[in-house]
Image: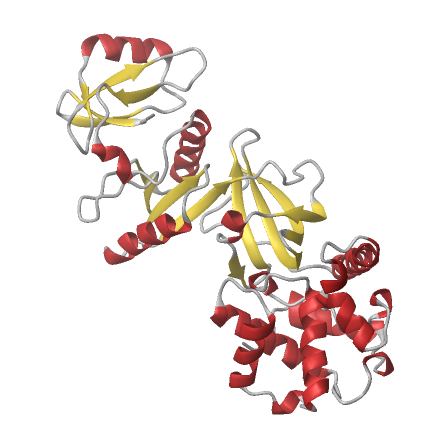
Length: 387
């Protein structure tokens, strides 16, 4: 376990920074004794040629559980970068400060003029429950927490702009809905010393999302963190065009290489509605905020919903909360029932804006693409969907 902060000579705290020279560390190692601020066990100051200089317990102890994850060289460097950043923007920074009331050690404890924040720089995958438990601990002592992920290697940092990316369930858990940029994940890459914003996240299917990627150097960053500007008209059109391209490719591939064979629900629903998958109108498979909680492609669950309304002769305005819950439980796989209900409500709200008549055949309802683009901008980009 790598540690940057230790108690020196039972007197004061000492933190290794990037400005601490090798000669200074060698002198300290020969003239000082270091102990763990939490368990008071002796620490060894390690000064190697590859790994960032750090402290390590001579004998492993249980106090290591107070960290959110086991340390790695990348984590150490990232903490040093972030400590320097928060100091530069005028904050008082404590590295690996132990909080005895909750037995936790955030990577950084940051104090500005108004508040104290626990900063966690997360480089490895840990159970989401562990993150929630740590957040509960911080809330108990009224310290808000800020989690920064190490930038995933799948993010195209060299080609910022609008891209199709894949996000694991773990990474998805760090989405925050921000006023100007919708669902956003702020990450940090120690290798390039840049904050990478993954913003305007729109779910396509599975772990695939549309996103706007933007890099901001640590020298340009502010605190509170800089916000991404709203999408331009050209960017919104790029989003729409890329989304529709991926939707059509999905439908074409589903016809020729369905993994479900004759049991394919999507193809069965298309057959019942007498329409080819690639001819499905664009309002079926429309992007809906947070739809990743429903574990099926947008086209599939939206077609299932509209087909159910047609069979039961139910109009959009007559849908009840009970009916929505029943539909989800019977027709969908989901990760969160409350959020899934909100997603279905959002899609029903969208259908209502189209004056959708569920009695009519699916292929007889035509909505212009310009109208759908307008609604896309209102419902998705501006986040005006009513949950």
